[in-house]
Amino acid sequence: MSSTVAQKPKRVRPLTFRIQHINQNRTNEEVKDCMEKALANDGKEAKDISIELTFASDTKDSSRRVCCVTFHNKSKNAAATSQPAPPHPSLFDQLNYLLPTDHLMVDLRTGEEWESSYDYGSEVDEESEFMVTIDKGFRGLTPLYEPTDPKTVKANVIAVMGLTPHPYGVWQGERKDHMWLRHSFKHSEGLKDCRSLIFGYNGDLWVEALYKKEDFVNDLIDTFTKFTALHPNVTQAPLFQVLQAMTNRYPHTQEPIIFVGHSYGGLLITDLLRKSFSRHNDAQAYRVYQVTRGIFFFGTPHRGMFIDDLTKIIKDRRTLEITEQLEQKDLYYEGIFTEDQKDFIRVVREGDIKIYSFVEKELTNKLHMPEGGSSPIQSTERKEQVSSASASLSIFGLEKEHRANGKNHRNIVKFDSRYDETFKATEDFMVDCLKSMKEVEPLAGHGIAATPQAAALSE
Image: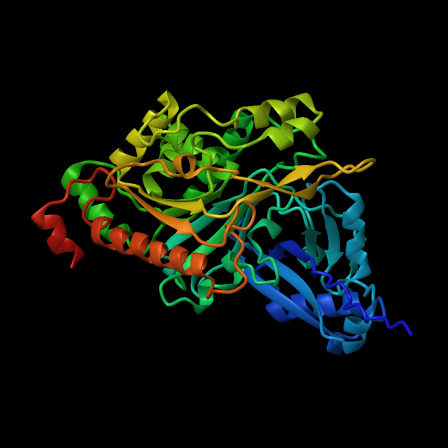
């Protein structure tokens, strides 16, 4: 007599969407009500679905806000179904057939697609304040968390992804929906006064023809130049106005930035800061360098990485050029630097920018393309993706290192909870970085000489 074992239904990870252009006159409850109406239009009941909303200020328009929304299925019937329907509104499924840069226009009053003849950005009537846009591509800069009072922000933690099609998902836990940049800061005594943001770009190796590295960097510097201009650190401004008069130098009045880079994203950050540092005649671009106080590198291949499995399956010429630039260099000795790396180290030293490097300890599964497939899958064969000699810059006196136990190249930035060992190390390092800013910033402010008079003013 044969017996069968009931297979546990495969868990469907809920998608997270970005809602933009929320007029500041519209309340959080109105946005939630809109999502409930969109579900009701499908015949879905709100009692079966938990709607998670997190709001933050728009990075480009002070009269607007941004929201991330995730729909979690609470229904027991859905959990028992072998192929449960996704809990988000079916209206959002249109985004599956659009480009990552495209969006859906929705009416906050009805939860339906916007039907007004007015377009956002043109001269609009009062109805337009009920129009929002929704996407799942997360291109550009997206704020995920900020303190209740944005004026109290101590620093902006900005995470730049590597070469991946998932700007949001790459930072999300493997077994849980926990996304540390969105969920962990409010529970951290040391980080609750920081704003967290992610930067997404065209990083899909398998679908799109990528831009050149300098195009990514130009996009970054343009984005962060505008961002720093819109986020003055008002709590420090009076002090630096006094210091400006004392030293006849421009004050450091912008909110500090702590960059987080995963893999290729870390390389983009190094090029961004080198470029910003070189623009002495462009005050706004130079300010990106001035306000950067720390960089967190997670598996960043400063001296190259293993790419043999990628070059065998990538067909697009431009994409292949980008990956070949990442090939493992013959620089296995710590302290050996390219000219670009020497320039970056100069930037770090002159700006007193703290460096925190995370090194993967586990091997990573190789990729291969299944027959007839369009996207690669992981094989059972594993390799060391980024060596410790490549992941660490070895900048004496300015770099701290953490060896991430149990982490490979793909999951080194994925934390299932705030109790994850690597997240706790990240949190400790960020608190360390914030403390160093507290000690140095009021006195020095990037180039403003520390004096007894300045010390007295800061008390």
